[in-house]
Amino acid sequence: MFPYFYWDSTMILLLPALILAFYAQAKVSSTFERYLRVPARNGLTGAEVAREILRLSGIHDVSVEIQGGRLSDYYDPRRKVLKLSSDVYNGRSLAAQGVAAHECGHAIQHDVGYAPLAIRNSIVPVASFGSQLAFPLFFLGLFLRGEFLMTLGILLFSAAVLFQLITLPVEYNASSRAVTVLEGHGFIDRDEARPVRKVLGAAALTYVAATLMAVMQLLRLLALAGIYRDDR
Image (tube, rainbow, N blue to C red; front, side):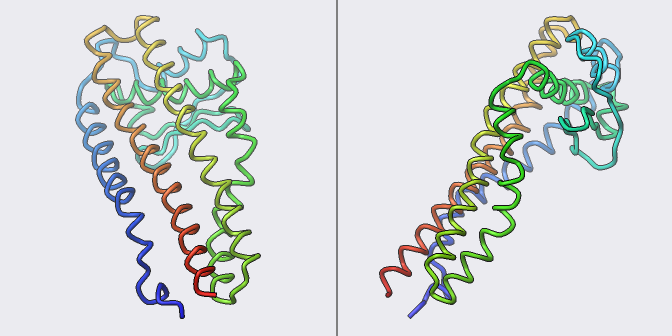
């Protein structure tokens, strides 16, 4: 009655996203490692660059802090803090300065009221709630033949997909702002901009992979729901 419990043919929908995810992770790691060994001519650390970019942008209420992990850098708009991994915070490389500038790009977005960032921040609770409960509800509905639970699971996961879709322009815009400010204020020379773009481009690819995975997962849920309806 439900052959996809034993062999779920819809899993094939995820293969392109899985392949891209593995490639993106390998690409960002190798690119970051490569340019982590290339010192920036200005000799500044990532933390120093971040603080100076914030100052030049007229942002005086955002702190810059170090944290553990690798490539774990992020901007927290609620606490107004830039969290930089040790490689970025203390690093004097093009990779470190590029990543630090990217996170500053998010702080600048927040400061100027960049609409996609505001939308993304507003749906974080719904997207988080949806990503946690969507699959349990959907497959419980599939097992119990409860179409309402399946539909609810799909709707909740749609919020997570929307979050990923909005994240793409937010991340690309932050990277664009990063390169512009690094070049515009003379932190890096023109020939140094290309490596910085490579680092940020590789990082952006991970968001593309995450978005593709979310979209394909949604299509998979819709396909499974269609199979269920056909079998009734």
